[in-house]
Image 1 (cartoon, rainbow over the protein chains, first blue to last red):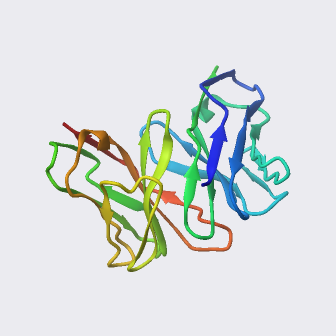
Image 2 (image 1 turned 135 degrees about the horizontal axis):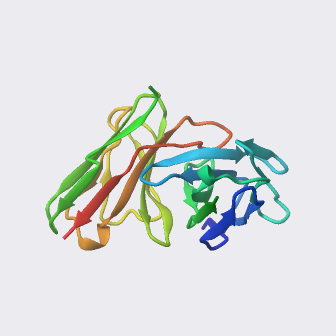
Length: 111
Length: 114
């Protein structure tokens, strides 16, 4: 079956530091890839997505590139803020409707 | 406002007492799905529905039932809850597209089964 593996957390950074959260996947066919963010006490919100190889998703300074050759979709941000503190989930979905999420990575940004 | 709503938000119940968690969306989405979130396990898909009267099992369907009689509603039914179903449950919906399922999530239902 499909699977998503995220780097283990928690991750603690100082404000304005560079962020990378690694994500690799295993899937048959050509899934779409997503990053979702979950703030405390809330549901998940879509952060960015990519639907085919070499696509780059971007939003609010976050970026991730769909790398089929390495089956990866790493999340990056050049300068994090305290307000970016949240749990980040990498996910894939297939056209058949199944969705698979990673375990989540907790990010804490300190002033 | 476009949203996915879930009720109740919090529920404490006892083993074996049937319960239903409702989910409703106002975005005319074809696709809806239920997940459970457990510490260290991320989100796991329970059931999903591609459209009215069409439902499929996700990765952890045991002990759960769903129905999709109307496009906007997708209730999750626990016929005989057990303590291992204590979890945080999320409903989500999405337009079907070739770009995969970009999902909108509800606020979650925290269920405790004693």
